[in-house]
Image 1 (spheres, rainbow over the protein chains, first blue to last red):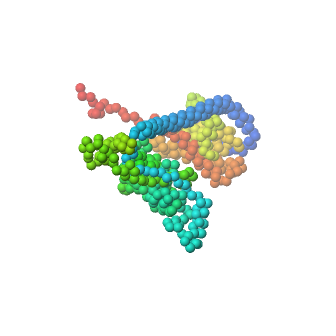
Image 2 (image 1 turned 90 degrees about the horizontal axis):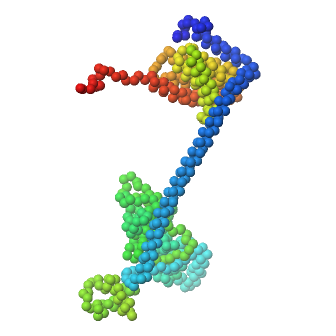
Image 3 (image 1 turned 60 degrees about the vertical axis):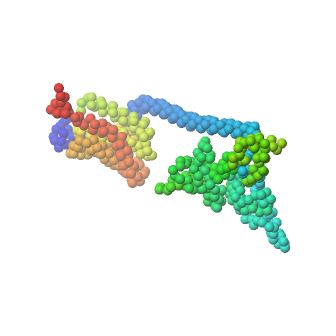
Length: 349
Length: 176
């Protein structure tokens, strides 16, 4: 209906006039004092009240249901997390059980087996203690006093640097530079300098530390992982370089020593992969390792020293035995453990 | 306006009043609260598209003023005026797309909220600075208009012409 059309309605008023009338009514209502219209307000409130009560009740019910649903969802999420944790712990338990059983079996077999250890090199652990501040101060005083005397300076005496870690073993225990130092069975560092009775340690964290390592996923054979070069960088976590990106490496993979093959029955644990990056176009991973040993071990440490097996340095008694003479002697017969299963002990007897 | 449509309008106004007084606080974003009654009035006016539909704006404005503390009349006045302007524009440019009435609804609500707020500020009922009143009014109008979008989408969907089947369409011929 056009606005200008004189199409009067039932009361003889056109749309434009009705609009003006309504607007005028509104303006008049604005001029009225609020108190005059209070009864109308109360009337409207009374008319709305029952429905408002019903809607508020319905809203409360919905709110309770929503809260209950939220609680159920939260509980289910927590239960799922607990179930995952339980499954992880069960897997860990299974793995530890298997490792324990393997260790028991190997120990039992090593006890029952009468074979002597015929490896050329045998590891020996020398217990050592990390010298603390007071010990360093005492040694420092002693060194100063000796320097002041005419013949005070002992041969091979160390010049101490306070931040260096100092062990109470040295040439007197056949310790040499490069020997691994273990703390709680984990690699802590390497002997850097050796004195008469003391030696300094370059820990895994310190710059200049380098070693060949293997990165192995948990549960895998620790002797079959990709090799890399571990470097201490002074600040933060040590880095592992030269691990090719074609090898799968993940966070929490274990890092073992990679250069002690043939010396140790099992590689030693360095730590685990804390962070890794794969730069675009790079051929090697950028890996940061979290060492398993503590930076400042409170317990006694041990120096891993290699020695030539004394059994191997002895002349082979079977070579001249009558039983042996009847068998064909090969080039490896004297070194083969199978040929000397009971030989050395029997001959020793 | 016939009796059925009038009763429907009264029921909708009653429902919108209940929603305004009980449920809109759940949808509030800070101080911005959607206004159901003005939204209903504008949507009704634009849907019916007749000058008689302005009665809905008048009634909804009055109920809105009665539910709001302060004087009665400014809200109804500006709502009536905004609805009339929106109806005039709608009749002048009757676009078919659903977004056009939605935009008109938003504009009308922004105008209503701004002018009502400024009127109440002039009457001394609101102590906020005019700039903040305008800011809140614009946001209130836009936020309220957003709740009318489903209605306009539904109307647009209902008015979409369905594809007619033609017997002459060669693609529909099934070879015997």
